[in-house]
Image 1 (cartoon, rainbow, N blue to C red):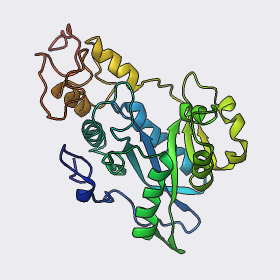
Image 2 (image 1 turned 60 degrees about the vertical axis):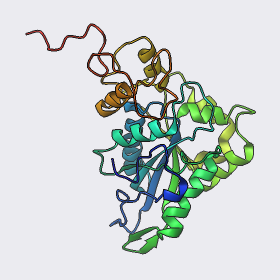
Image 3 (image 1 turned 180 degrees about the vertical axis):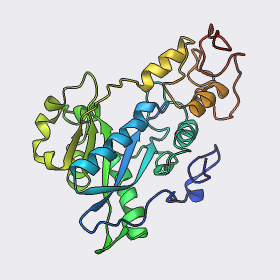
Amino acid sequence: MAAADNITGDMTLADYTFPHARLRRRITSPDRTPLVLIACGSFSPITFLHLRMFEMAADYARFNTEFEVVGAYLSCVGDAYKKTGLVKAEHRVNMCSLAVAQSSWLSVDPWEALHEEYLETAKVLDHFHQEINVEMGGVETPAGRKQCKIALLAGADLIQTMSTPGVWDPKDIDYILKNFGAFIVERTGTDIDEALSTLQPYTPNIFVIQQLVQNDISSTKIRLFRRRDMSIRYLVPEPVVNYIEEHSLYDEDGAASTSSDGKGGGKGKAPGESKGAPGEFPG
């Protein structure tokens, strides 16, 4: 993990630097607009579906829009966001960093997670605009420098919450969808047409991506498997499986789930394996 992408228990905003090593600084087509995708969420833990969403969005942008993806970021919500199953931000940022360690274009930004107070999604997107378009000056193109389109990447369940009265502040919805827009991946069990029905004024800035290979992996299911002492291997990246096991995250008693000391008691079996999993494939 790159130093800028992971955090330790004593890291503060004073130590923070914006991670930009994987952000492409030039595009070759003068007709395209550079695009940076931002996924905000709990990521407790990150799953293969979270990662797959970026690939689906990049394909969609390439084939169906005038945008060209130049980078993407995972932004973990901070500890002030009280939610069931939310382990400390330190662990969630580190798991995300492990998950994208081999990627050439996905990054983890710990800025949101380092805040003691809860930050609305609009403020997080403003942060990326400030860092990429103001501080860094956008991206070089044959037609001169261009500002990047900063867009929210999320599952259809997020759009469903936006269309549900009382969940989001209408001013935040208006600000996000007017100024940034969203790439939304269809998810099993969510009626995307119904979810979009109350957001008609923003549909030109909402891009709906069909999930051609159905995948309903969720962090909730991963936590359930852990509580039941079942295997989570091949549902989350292997380094994340190892991290969860090493730090005893999402165990039934939850003892290590809120601990940041990095110590966890192993159970004497390979990380992520079910209790009865053989050490070798029987030949």
